[in-house]
Amino acid sequence: MDNDWTRLPDGHPEQCEYSSCSNKSMEGSKFCPAHGGNKGNEAFKKKELRNYRLAKFHNAILDKSGSSGIKSLTEEIAILRQIVEEQLNSCNDSNDLILKSGPISDLTVKINTLVTSCNNIDKTLNNLIDKEKVVQFAQTIVTIITPHIPQSEIEEVNKQIHIAIGELS
Image (cartoon, rainbow, N blue to C red):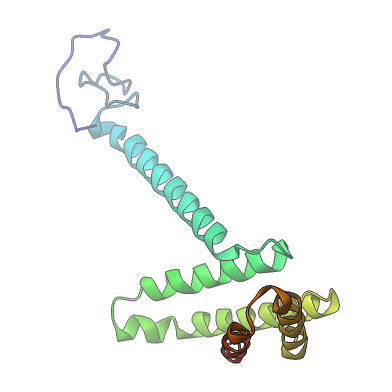
């Protein structure tokens, strides 16, 4: 899609459509570079870039949403996180960061609000379990496996489960 300044004979199918111009029109345009043929190429490149960015954002959002639970809020949290990431990535120096600190701060507050709302919905739907229930579940598992494991191994299994539960905090 180079700027081609080739002269063509009158009536040639690739001739620029601007009145009395005999230059070759640019690929993807009806006009030569002198009469705006390059604008079509620029518009095409902008459209390709916009489509690339949309696909990139879509993939990033899918990566960040990940939950099979309540999709609407988790996807919106992922969208806001992606916007914050893009804002931070667009900063070239500390001045840019200072200029964008207001929008970044607003987005952070919005993320906090959405996370709180999502957490409240999870509590309401009983999608969260507290540590006490996890300990109870672990004790049930130990009780189930005790008859199938030698007594010398039970203490080690119990110890490893308690360590794992302790790492949840």
